[in-house]
Image 1 (cartoon, one colour):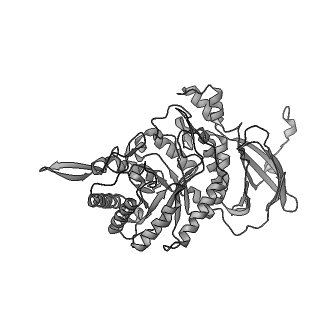
Image 2: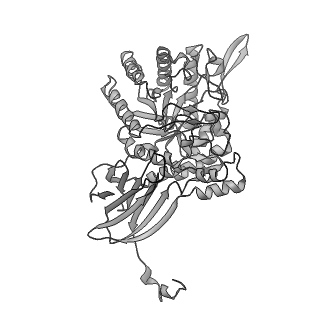
Image 3: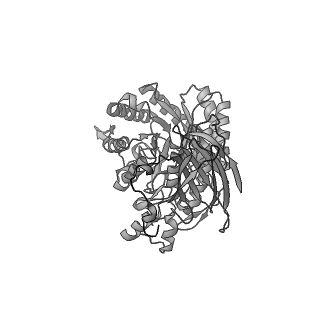
Length: 501
């Protein structure tokens, strides 16, 4: 049994909400779909991220870069019709773009290197002057439409995972550094106070960051922040419809956060802000782990501690309206999203909601527990029991002594587990229908809700005592608040007169 006596005073740290700074999305063109926007509205109402980042700003489906033939020559034409609609939709929902500058418009591309079902072009530009002019024209348009004060709040990130040949032709670091320099100088030419950064690499290639920082320093190239991605899955077993991957321990990701933070701090560029612009368990959108309760429990420690090392870390992604590997083929298919198709919240969605409710001063934190106190004295306890072993007998016994400022306490417990708040389990019980009926969708929405129980506790010497059991992959949020008992105001109150009470 884990026995914890929570200190009465905070340790001076506030639980950082850096996990809520940004969230990922599929390509930006998906924001033209109704279901996508419906999911984003729910995400913002229930969690409330500050920024959203996705691929494909310059992809042909948004159509920003076009060329007209005039007198036998190609003349660029910039079309902002769709991107205005997309960014308007974001801002109306209280979320700002974390702007990824990529991929290459087909009219500017030097080759056929492409990525994803939707064929994002990942080659250098035919003409770097035209590329720089595109960058300047787009940012000037954003300023004209939204105002300089607003656009100054938007980070501009150059490209995505150029250390992979699928995302950048030949994974050519020298060519990426050229692209970055041209892009960064174009951004700063519009306004020197705009923020630009990179290199947005994936894990396993941190020598890129070392060399990139040296390049920016030696060539005096503008760099306002550093970006990287983080996933914890091992090599996949690939089937026609799924990728299966074992996971490293969740400390693997935290160590990556810490080690890259140290690389940046030791660099000649100094202590720049560090953003993880993608993270999740698996890096593939057809891995069933994303739909499971394990995914939620596994990420708890990363959400709890990640903000100690990075300025933001962006969950990839908020919705299963996502098409990197073709249009999704079934209700649950291993998609990255916090919300599954048909608006069904996954367990990880609820974990994010739990962590939002736990924001406050830290009273206690270890690898499987977070205790915080809000300004009004309310206490939140988040406890989790991630289990990557197969089988069922993995309970966690927990005994807590929790300091409170009042004699009588109302307790609310919200729980997700293998049994509760787990629509993937119910979908399997239904026979895994690919295209769920309206009745099945309604059932899945009902079972997707956490189990909520309540109680009343009396404090003793300024503490309440809680003994509880967490089942396999359970995450429970306990909220303790003061009771303002008004029972005495009811004349003739006598519950014993109620039948069977």
